[in-house]
Length: 276
Ligand SMILES: Nc1nc2c(ncn2[C@@H]2O[C@H](COP(=O)(O)OP(=O)(O)O)[C@@H](O)[C@H]2O)c(=O)[nH]1
Ligand SMILES: [Mg+2]
Image (cartoon, rainbow, N blue to C red):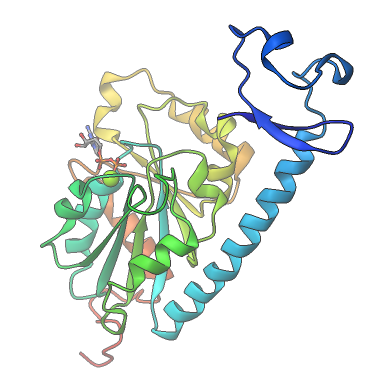
């Protein structure tokens, strides 16, 4: 895709910067009068205006999602991570762990395939799949419109807790409000201690950071102290939960955190059915 820039006459356009081309002959317009294109001082302004419009529209729909969900008594958690950190594996353990305490819906976001949705089907949760390459341009995140489409396929009257497995990506999902009540993220210790510093937005927006793949700790030179220090610089308030989604060790604090946000703190009571 080309890069946008504005010329002194006010026209804005984009074109590929293919350095194999001879610019003097290929382009109809004169470049030398606007100087070095690597600067693009005005490009940022154009992009900010466009992004503000997109995000403003997204936020309006996110607010409708939030209102609809809370109208149904549903607490919604937006679960984010880089690809492969362990979101699906964690959810496969979480659904049975909350059985009898919360009726769970999963909104599964993936660019392509139903692999994760299939893996989470049959565990006791209602599962709705949104593929972003099916009508949503193959986006690297879920936005509020996509989530709204996925909600239409869930039995909202029968749910207490909705967990949205966002598209695996450490950047884009953090920029889009989808109507959640809380954001959680999974971080795997195979990713490197510096990730909170390099990808601050997601780590900053997460209320809870699940530190996953703890079973691999003996095989890695991962420095937990350094990771926690880096995370604290970006988000000192984050709740940190170390666990292994593979073995299930350390799962309980995560399950109780979810129960807490869903307002079903007392183990054993079925949400929405007091007295049972
Ligand atoms: N060793 C180990 N592997 C894990 C753990 N959690 C997930 N994995 C593996 O990591 C890979 C990606 O997991 P997945 O749940 O699909 O990650 P997602 O892309 O975030 O949904 C799979 O091969 C999982 O089996 C864990 O706690 N320990
Ligand atoms: Mg997954």
